[in-house]
Length: 239
Image 1 (cartoon, rainbow, N blue to C red):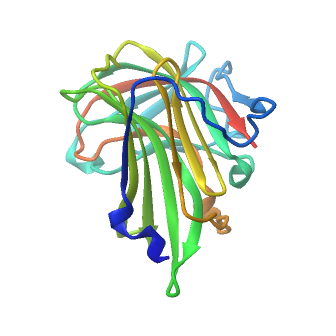
Image 2: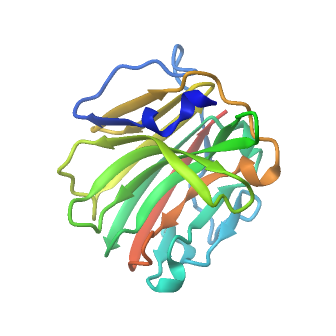
């Protein structure tokens, strides 16, 4: 586990598209459409809904997150969690549009992707690809954090942070974002902005408890800022 100490934090900035290998890419990735939100409301057979910090609905064929502002929403995520076998999902691809936003609210893909044993306890790897459009210098970034112990994960540190090249205009624009994860590698990709890849020194063990199989799409504010309106559409998964 010593291989994952905080001094191994990585920082990357991507200016152009990189040609990088990823699982399943030799013959092209086997992306499967999970939901295009063409129903009148969120499909409860496909998603678990956490809507405390945002009103979640379907509007004109897209999932709409109206993220709320207020101190009671600090560090409280709103999610649509993949309900069908999330532990087998190796990648998520989705179209994201931040229609309007104030403050540090981020739209994101996120989820636990594995764990390691450090001779004392398991530590869980949380992975995300996020867009922040309402801050002074908008950013799109991928990050990998280690969390322990469950269930509230009061301790964590950042293992990797990779940022796509600034300046960026996010509000009012639609981005197709992808995040893939397999074995010892995570990849973050944004159409027309490039790709970031990070490799770990060893493969992760799969998560087994239900709570740690989570993967989904959603919004979050660290400081309880907002409001923010985000749309998600055409969610694809890679198994």
